[in-house]
Picture 1 (cartoon, helix red, strand yellow):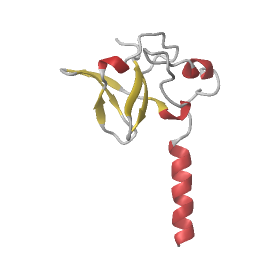
Picture 2 (tube, rainbow, N blue to C red; picture 1 turned 30 degrees about the vertical axis):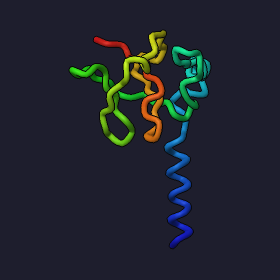
Picture 3 (tube, rainbow, N blue to C red; picture 1 turned 90 degrees about the vertical axis):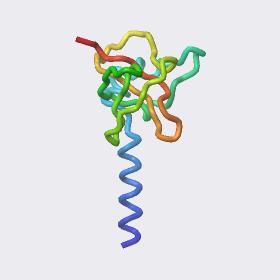
Length: 106
């Protein structure tokens, strides 16, 4: 039983660290080019996800994989092209939002 639990833990960790859709394919170079204002890479490719966005009185918010809406600090919003068209957030619970690219807005 312990071996099964350990295997499930490893598999769930691998699944949660998978790169985003087209992260290594068509949009791979774009994901790798994401840099903050200081020119540093925002994160590892596996930390970025296509997400949902909304605007609140506090500014932009994005939805995490656990279903929690998090505030996006203004200095984490990258003002650049978005060939995907959907919001992308690079986020780790321990580090918070590392960068955010807005999706097309209606």
